[in-house]
Image (cartoon, rainbow, N blue to C red; front, side, top):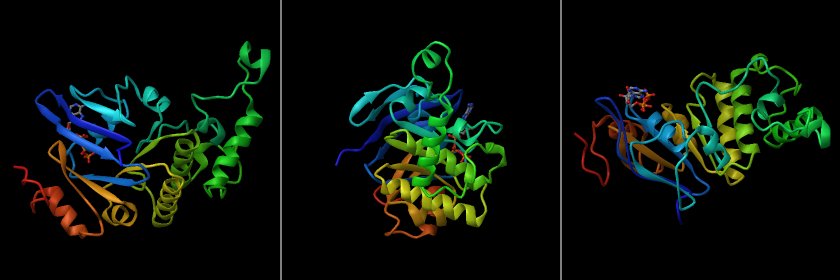
Length: 258
Ligand SMILES: Nc1ncnc2c1ncn2[C@@H]1O[C@H](COP(=O)(O)OP(=O)(O)OP(=O)(O)O)[C@@H](O)[C@H]1O
């Protein structure tokens, strides 16, 4: 099986800091791949490079086997790589429907839409409602509710639904449960599994080992700017993973990084 998204020998430096050091990456079709690593290991830099938010100094990225160079996150999004950041790119004062369609608004047909640029609100609301129901998120009563009035879990839900709704090939979730309570985390983890079940592979960056071990099919362990190893959570314990990540234990099949 070919990876759906992969990277070879990515390098990224910030002055004297090496954020990515010959980093490789592979996401396989239909999997949840967790990316774990200590603070400052370079996880965000990797995700930013894969999602068009930064340009690596060197190295190659491939989507479905084709070499790609994203010049912006919008570019990546158009190609089917959706990223839901820790700090959600949502407009709190806008409604759920407006947020779901941000940057992809549906215009009214004909003159009203094409020339006067009027939005087709009923269509956007109908589609937003459908997408949220499909993902079991319709505990949200009112699609016109402002996002700022939603709970943290519901906001994550809307962001994931937005990503899942637009034919994404890959969804990247950066610490989706970091700010959430137990119940809300549960819903988001269920949602992640639902999205995977629909065939969309997910990259999950998380410091939460129980969450990682619960949902991930494979775990990419990142250390000192590169992929140290990839492990199957069925074969290792959480303490093994943390030991690999911090360098306390040498990684399977890899020389221990200095
Ligand atoms: N814009 C920047 N300017 C300068 N240094 C940066 C910048 N972005 C990242 N770095 C540095 O690059 C290294 C990798 O950072 P990165 O944010 O990718 O790590 P991380 O694994 O995501 O960390 P965390 O888990 O703490 O979010 C760090 O040493 C960081 O200080």
